[in-house]
Length: 320
Image 1 (cartoon, rainbow, N blue to C red):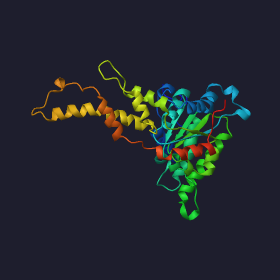
Image 2: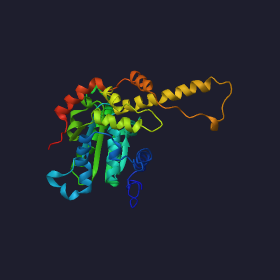
Image 3: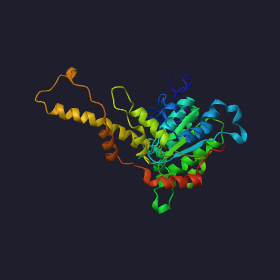
Image 4: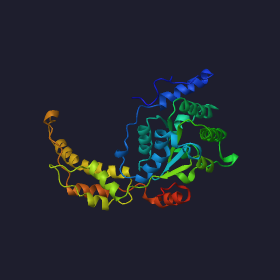
């Protein structure tokens, strides 16, 4: 079932043809079917999941309880090292809530034509209200709204875009419509203070802990009767500081070694073998895993302390 509501027209009634054209551009690029990402498919990150459920999922499921002072948070920031699952969490929220999912990057709302960028932002929020409940996912938000500098150091068009985005987010807090802005960044310390204020819920998505890494290795490199017993404990012990993406690369590198051995044999043959006669790829050996660990280094561990510091200063925490 598509996420947008079938009983509604795709576009609200815009006054001008220009605005309608901008809206059609956004529709083509942004509205998707269900992202189909379940909570269970995201290993670890239990604190981040719990905070997201509290901020977005529960208000949509049980709106009766989220009124007055307990009205839902309309702006949520996911921050942490690259490759830790921020985008997957956003997609899981959209899947769980069956909301319209607007997947926005800087290229979606930055235009070379004067004045179009802020119009695109305004149209985006109108579309989100029209298709509510909606999730506007702003990926790499630091590329859109980094800290505002002095007039000489920042382009006027960039300032207007940022101002319009801040105004639209202010508008969300004054309505009862279920439109959530979910932003993700690897560089939270570069965000403008005014945007941080509007992103009221700030959730750290950290590097995976040992238990989560173990679950990832079991998923990517499952043990079967035909293969060696995968040394999961060794893999977990040697991947402290690795992100989820790094762990996937370790597994891919290990799985490539038997294929490389087979390719060397096939390339050494004088004649090409028919496809239906090609031999099966051999099992992963212990030395393949050792080689994969040596050849794959963590990509995001150097700034881990900065994320922890930002989380202490600005982050949301689970209480109780």
